Structure formats: C-alpha cells, structure tokens
Length: 396
Image (cartoon, rainbow, N blue to C red; front, side, top):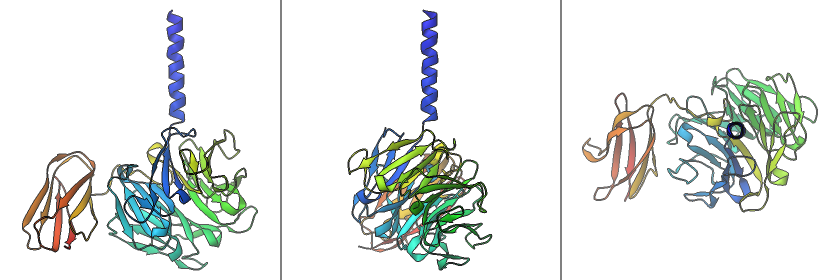
C-alpha cells in the first residue's frame, strides 16, 4: 500500500515537472483574421482571442506586432489603422490608442518601461514613454547607409537597453546603443548563403543574448552569437517564417506563414519539433500568422520585458479630447495612499475620483463630466512619494 502511494506521489511530481517545463503563454498575431490569439501550449490549451476587423475600439485591421509590458499590459501594432493599441488583458479592458505612425510593425517594451515601435513606412524607430505619446523620439530615415532604414519591421531591446532592428528591405539587422544611433553596427547583405538575408522580418534575443532572425524569403531561422555573424547556424525546416521568439530554456518559436501555423523546436537542430494551427478563422485556425512572442513573465530575455520596477508614476487618459467621459489609467510602482482629483483651469477641485490606499500595479477610473463647461481640466495623481498630472480637454 505504501509503495503504491509512493509511486502515485512520484508520478504526480513528474507530471507537475513536465507541465512546468512546458509552461508558457504564446501570443500570435493572426493578421488576416484581424485578431491576436493567446495559447498556453502547443496543443492550443487556453485558446483566447481578441479583436475583429474595423477601426473602432476593440477592432483591428491587420495586427503586425505584439508586446507585453508593464504589469502584463498588451501592446498591438494596428498596421492598417496606423496606430498602436494598448489593452490591459485579452478581454480588451483598458483600451488606449496612439496615432502618428505609417504602417507600424513590430513593437517592444524596454527594461525601463518605454515603448519602441518599428514605424515601417516612415523608415524609422519610434520610442515613447507611455500611451499618451509623452517623450516621443524617433531615429532613422529612408536609405541604406548608417542611420537609414528601408522598411524596418521588427525591434527588440536587450536588458542593457541596446536596440536591435530587422531592416527588411536592406536585408540586414542593425544594433544601436540608444535613440541617437550611437554604436551603430549592421550585419547581413542580400543573398542566400552564410552572412546573407532575404527580407529578415523578425528578430529575438535568447537567454544567452544570442541573436535569432527569421529570414523569411530564405525559408529559414538564423542564429548568430553576435553582430559579426559568429557561430552562424540555420534551421531550414520552415516555409516563410515571418517572426521568431525564444524562451528561457532556449526553445524557439516561429510563425510559418505559408501554412498558417506556429512551430516550436527545442534547438537549432530542429529536435522536439511541434506544429500548431491550420488555415481558417475558428479556434485553432489562423489566416496568415505573422507574429509570435512568449509572454516575458515566463522568460529571461525575450522580445519584450515585463517591467516590475518602473522608474516612476505613470498616468494616461483616453479619449483625450473627450465629450462626455474619459478613462484614466495609472500605474503605481509601490503600495501607497492615492488621491486622484480633477481640477479646472483655475485650480479648483471639481471631482475627487480616488482617495484610498491602493496596491502597486495598474488601476483604472472613469470620469464623467456632467454639468461642467467645455474647457481644459487636469487630473492630478498623488501618492506617498510622487505627484503627476495630465491635461484633459472637454469638448461638448
């Protein structure tokens, strides 16, 4: 009897270990179904989707980039709506959007919580502090020289803050140290051999900071040790791989656009290969898989970082200007006493939205402006250690 119990106990432990080894959350941009999808494993467990065709709230026209950032917030490059979308979770709660792009592709969140976007048809990389667009800075222009891009389609940020870019039509990858372009180095040229790319469309960093590139038109994934191409390896068992991601165990995930599916391999030899997906628009089906990424809360270094220790208080509002109500989103870096008040242009308090102790993390509140005149108002957020305000424009 005791032996049987011991055997069952060992079996349970082994099963739990196997499940822990396979644990990840995989996000896929299902481009022509105009949605993003999240699954828990390569069997499609936990399938959840968000989005459908359109240009309004909850709608997407060709998602081409996904990142997971501060406290699990999801960032989506909405290609044909020329905007960046941010949602709190896969329900679409906390919707925010930012315009000013021309066909945005890949996006990433840096270790400091700043957001990077490959603004492909403007041939530049954009960095913003938050979804209000504060701190907007761009780098790059059209061309093939230093400081120039020809359809940059993906971006990834290292733990040290270095910026890696897939420069698609220049058939190369680029690394810069900062948004001034310091430390520019590029690798690759057009072709089909060692050191060549043909439309590199995805770039990722592994747990050892090795570089992975989805070499789309060469139908392969490339791995190199550094920006000089040292240690060149390829995995050739894939058709039209648009994107690549790597988890902390070195497992490699890629989109196989030609077959409308995603692939996982354990290493560059292709061992442990698994496929998931088939053509269609239902559960387990895709129509042009274009982006894959592993939730960074399950990774050491991946395409993006979950910033658990942000540099300071953050507050955004959407829509702004507004005509009846505005959604205010803020993030606390620590547990704190919080007040959130609305003031008119003379500094008078017109509404107290929050006055309580709150946990660190993301919070939402809606302000309805009934009975007030059109004009400029401010939302002032105060914690134990910091204060921050944002202007709100009320138009009846």
